[in-house]
Length: 78
Image 1: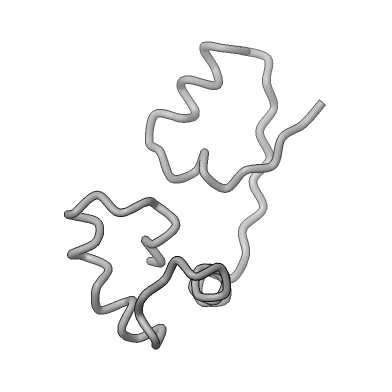
Image 2: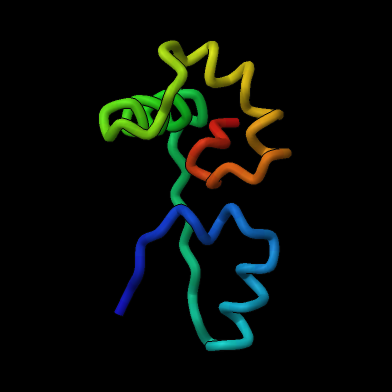
């Protein structure tokens, strides 16, 4: 059985929670190029109508403010 979710990597306590749930769990992480991943996430958010910033650079400039305001992790491109 398996699961594929990038969300787990965002939360600092995720590994401990997974271990408490199943100490024998094996975790394999495969990472994409971080720049390609960030731009891809931006494009997905634009495609789906969630990202109001019309340019990737604009979204990056807004990121710190968005994090402080509690925007969903998928808008935290860095």
